[in-house]
Image (tube, one colour):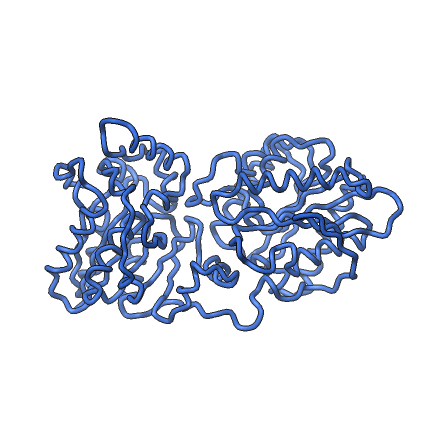
Length: 499
């Protein structure tokens, strides 16, 4: 007999698990949908001292009362904090921890740090410092999206979510999580809701980059599932979620493995390109053409976030080296750079790094500073918004390859980094967009949002489609179709620089 303890996120209670509970009980499992102190129909017990420790103790008492030999404890969003705290104190009782579209908090992390929306975090910090109410009001109907994608949630269920939501005791978000380390030895399963921004492929890429925070995920006791929905699968896909929880309890799921050979981002480029000399100036590399007069330039802006200690750094990755060489062989200056996008909070710093690189480039006497193109990749695509919003006259083309063109729902970035909105003021700036057919659902949605806005404002966008290519295809999909797309994109950008 397996017992499931279900712990939901902020502002909610055990009621959100109603349909999932029914499905699990039909399978013969014991189910305990939890309403923590001060939440849901337990609002009254909340007192000024209610904090994360209060919620951990709620779960420890429940675990001690459950008689089933196997306990699978599920933490959704904020709920993963008290779940990990309780499992750390009763590790011998826990068969598996399920992170349901939840983060990976470590010892000392307050839940506040994992709230994606910076404006929300700032408001909470202000509330903590203010006198008076020690709770944060639940979101209004239009604000729930800022706490995670509501994709797939039926309108009546979303209205019920708003109606039954309770204020969140502030101390539950600001008190640091304390772990002894016992929890790290327990089997874990991650359930990723792809419409909220993350999928298994994205996690695998982070492992491949060598980020030490993710190396524990290749443990065979760790498994993963995906759900093609938003942040509230218990409301949008309860049947599918119940099935996944049962499979997780049985030890099923996708296992990550340590990269064999070279990780994907360090594999060879999909085509041979001529060797060109490279000149390194600080964080910027110039690939120079054979020319005796100033030439136009293409600046390649890598994606991310990329952990700060990753070596080699992006400008030495085969993809960016090859693009720089390729445009230099065709008569333009190829420019690559390392910018400081190491975390989701670093977009402003990365934007400054790109702007500084452009200034350095345009001041170089070998560069025609009035003919420059900016080319963005993956998560770097969000950095294009500033230039789209107010294109300078020297910017002759903006290109993007498998880009993210609006912040993913769980990223919490300001509207400054939303190219899908900025394109409305791009005027007649030529845009070359390379779109891959095997893109993740969350990223593909941002591209469609961008193209819809571009069509409405009659922006000049050339779309180069590669139906059978993946995100990062230059080192993984060595097909004639992919090679043709790279060549077409490069020549389209250079054509705009020459016109």
